[in-house]
Amino acid sequence: MSSELATRLTELDLRLPDVSPPRGAYVPAVRSGSLVYVAGQVPMANGELVATGKVGGDVTPEEAYGLSRRCALAALAAAVSVAGRDAVAGVVKVVGYVASADGFTGQPGVVDGASDLFLAVFGEAGRHARSAVGVAELPLGAPVEIEVVFETSG
Image (cartoon, rainbow, N blue to C red; front, side):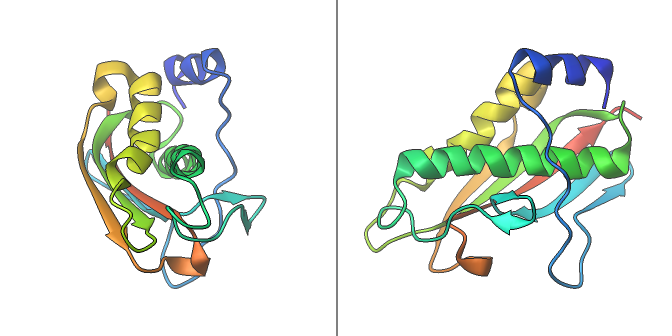
């Protein structure tokens, strides 16, 4: 992680989590050229899912916003793990999946948790293209899953 990125995370009182091992036949992140593609991240702590349920039902939109931030930090940790400590320079694309209760249409507000975190960490380099998608179910019963493409500097 670059000293600039490390400094910014410290200023924001954020710490990158350990990269969660995959629960399937994939890797957490892959670097291709100047891009790092991060597999979908669900809200984990110490290898365990921290929340289950559907947003707009068991999980409030405010809780899901925080879970989206947690997923974004996990995605950043995965990117750093493959790109090296000085390479992650910004965010290109975010796709957020929100397990949604019937009638819930606030997916963009939930995925704003990830987007807002990236803007706080990277400034203008954190601006990105984005999709926010409501789904019936997510792996392990997670309420939110965030997938990210990062830009690297070298």
